[in-house]
Image (cartoon, each protein chain N blue to C red):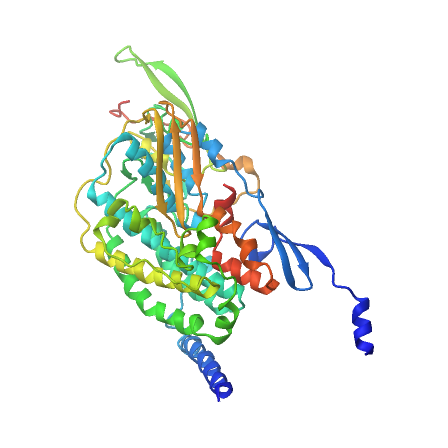
Length: 373
Length: 158
């Protein structure tokens, strides 16, 4: 056949292509070196370092109060949870017991942060698979949470509301009212998310069976958060190592066993419902009391090593402090969820198409400053 | 038959999604959340805790309450605050007293973390709510917070 001979003259060849560092689908300055054959992906190599600010080294220079504000700049979408991780590590080292009021307020704002992060992710996820409407709907609901943060904490994104020993200031008098208004509003909007995107046939075809991660691989790559729970690996730090007021609330861990992009999507949607339930259990009975306990102006941790892990919107964040007894840490190490979750990208996208790579990356939900630090 | 039911199911899901967007399209005025920002400057009010920039309030006698204790300077993580101070002899008691000459604030370096205001023992500095901080030259972002000729309010102790 003549067509066959023509095809033989054009041998398929692998070639490299850069995706990023300024590609909008990479959600930040992440460069992916793709080896592709036609549109089939043969290899994905993430190239990091474009937004490295040496936060761990800067921590060695700063006092323990000053370290907290640097963690805002790691995973900026769950900045309050990052702050809390450092504060809990310092408080455990100093053996300070913070008031119940502080614990409850911290947990409420944690869950608000998680909803805010997931609504942004939901919007961007829709945009990555080509549905621009979801972007605006996600941002509309996130705006209300940002207003709550702005009124109570003073900032919308890099809040720095936690200090070792409690909170920087008490909650604003409008806080409880606004949170209740938001919950009532958001409960009517979440079913709309399902109507708009979850049930959409195009969205399902783009995500079902794409980027499948088995439970064994999730554990082997050190995945955590919704990525691991989409593969059936139960790893919620809030369940297994409850911190702050999480031991007082009941909630279900969102688990799906399929391991594909759609399962990771469903886990995050379910997590939003669980966060709403946690906030509802706590918002009506915030205990009275102080919003901080007095600490010394210069905090010196006893000599030793301290570790604290929390569940951010992306997974398990670990804070590891080595103290030699001085006012600065000798070494500070952050175990960020984004880096481990990114490391499995090559494993789950090889053999797929470039369009699927974008959709899969959206469900991994990477935040590049968290990966580079 | 599943071929036709798939088509029917697919079209139905698309229509369900379009029902949501169509509802907002028809009721676009009711749920409008867009702020007409440059046009609403007169009515726009920021939240009272909003962190815009650090200012030092002065009263009508041109007096502030900064004693020059430098706690804000120490608390600042990135050196945004510099205090130039001097000791002067108090004519009444004859003791030497610390007085600020200039309280310099670099807005360009500030990360709005709020540690300086948390550290201040005499509430001499506070947050201002203005956020339109664009200038033509970065040297304009360095500000001297205490006004010329101002002095510390009587009764504010270090």
